[in-house]
Image (cartoon, rainbow, N blue to C red):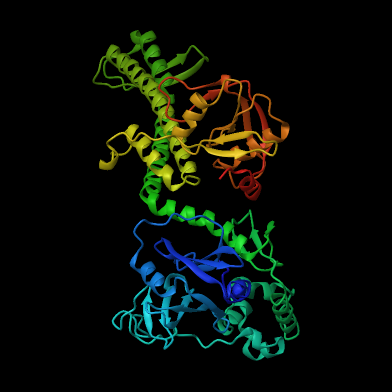
Length: 565
């Protein structure tokens, strides 16, 4: 995440429009998030302050959050001291990821009081603190006692002390030539040295400085430093970068020269962060709720993949059955030549006219030796049939759990219980006590609207897939699924969709599949009447025919534009 000191600086600049705005409401929709609803210029602006260990940030959000009926104590304290107050200043401390918001409000008897909100963006150590005009702490989201922190105390009534710093330099107070005195070229790792010496730098920006020139020398480093720092002073260009080969994603307030194969620009820093953190926040909530489910699915996949390896190894051993039958036939045909006590028989194989040496048990009669090989043949034949059956079942289980694994990447918090119920019904998991009673709830399919106005529906779990394909869709609607790849069922609710709508539905099918991050994903499509669910098949499993195939490359932002909220 690139919410570094430079990004904080740009964000604070963009928030200056909120100065002199009135704090209309204060909500705490999530445990680590406060939203100040600021009334300014006859509009409400939701200022989000988050101290999430992975997603700590501040920005104006357009997302609608559900607020708890009973607000937490921290929100109540903020409301008591800040609601109705006027924001007098929003400032960054040096070039650090610390922001202070001064608020002037009235107490119960109408006297003016001054309060300051202090947001410390420090990863897992992030904190949100409210202090009075004397810098005494009124409340802090995370309390730090002398027993738990040797550097400072964050408790109501204590004087506020800033978190300990590493005494780094403000990069805006230095020029490229000044930088040379802090860099040891013999030590190498120039980017890391810049990171260690300058406040507010992230690895993203130090790497950008180093990559601006082919080689770092006493001449090129100052040039690269001044060039990048000058660019940071310009109007922000909010961008989202992604490298599809590595899967690495970054956001920043300016375009970077580092190698990325996908760059998306946004109208504002706030839109950028809303887009970036919305998907990650949802995935984080799903991860927390479905952590045990994800582990269970991975365990089942590993179990069945190990099992099928062993079954294939055993199947190799059954290939010997024809030889066992041949030995039995040759012993029977040459039984007159065998004497009691013979340890082997050399006979002509009448299938290929080659001699074969057959081991014999000298303690058994020739007839018993022949029967032994016939029994071995029958055992291997039965074993082969059973192994074939077990391999098919194991393949079905692997395909089933690969489908569940893919679904877990796209589900919302509300879909988790559906998957738990399904696994319980299939006998893979024990049913939870709270789920023993059948929950009657309407199945909510994910809806998209094509560029030509057609409705496209997507099933994000097996229950939704079955409902969409077997009940919701008509026989002449077009059905989509990735070719030989686990994925969701996708249906266009139109008998005669345009080519554009078909391509967009194929893109959705590719996106909601195991190959979602790839390009040129093969997608089959056919009419619903050609899709069949075999009797006794697992949830979500179907067969189909009369299909056509096209290739789609998912575009996340394009897909988001089609999504019906």
